[in-house]
Length: 291
Image (cartoon, rainbow, N blue to C red):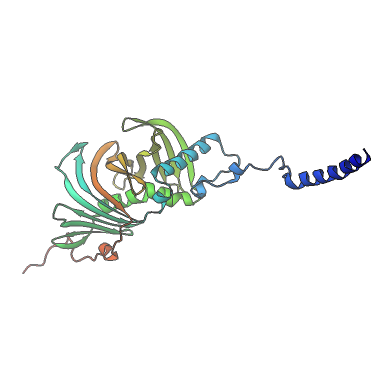
């Protein structure tokens, strides 16, 4: 009996010591949870949780995170080049006014593009930075300003730029705009407002979390009124891990202006920088000298 009492007196302190070593110290009552303190899955500053964030903002960020994941996650965020081949249709007052034109598009993120039109590929548009050129049998001319401005607006408000540039800035606001309809589908609208007070709204289909439509406004330099431009996305297919729309419809003030059907897309194809080089050789606004 005496031996049993001695064993108990030795064992109890040892058990208490081991329990103290293995048990984690209690967290302070005001310490944030691990989930709340972690950054967004895609390490984008504007999606990081903020103190006192309202439920609408949290919902908007969650939708954006799911959208990025549905588009391909890391593959979507890191592709560098893209080629497209398909047919383009122009519209006037919402109605097609052509039988369609073949096109080949070469794009190098973020600001280099070469667009070759017609089956002979003899009408070419090149954009490098904020400069645009039109190449035909006559030579190379500066692209008409309204056409170039539209192309630059479309590029600078693209989903790629929003996700890969705007969301790097913690000053960018992500705002939940409620439910609505886009292209006859129920959607949830998310508006992105950057530090320059520029905004874009993406309508996300809650069924597959893919963008259904993108819209933005700008002030028309002619009448000084605000116009709305946008794109409608359909016929998504997975290409090299990236969900990619194969039907893209452009709109202006709710009227369709262009529709493209893409037959082939490839990502991360090596491109020669010379493809995007252009030098003006003539001006279409100057009369040729008399002989």
